[in-house]
Image (tube, rainbow, N blue to C red; front, side, top):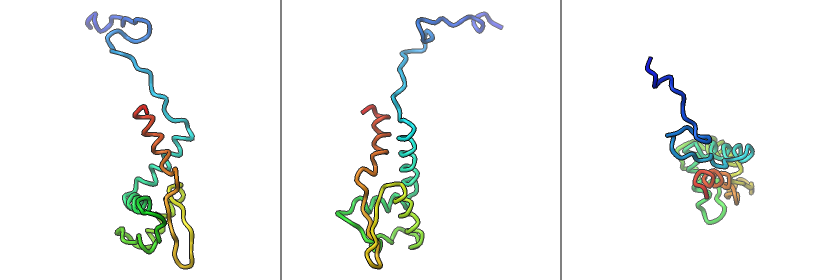
Length: 122
């Protein structure tokens, strides 16, 4: 065994010499913010739900469920995905007679924005 492998590391007031500049970790998210963000990311991680959300959020007002059925899945599956988006707090709805109308919840993407802010340092 060589003497270099057994030599003690030089420490200069904290970091190991030669490691480069040391940066403190970012503030990150607290537990509740991380849980909220994970819920939103999970809801938007499905391509069908992402398409549904983008159609609802991009509309100029409320959207009738009868107008958003052409996403490549059956109506019961659309209803399932819309329920998941509601449970995640991204959209809200109201039944009017036979039809259900959907709209984006203001601030529904705040958890995603919080994650992006913590990563980009904004």
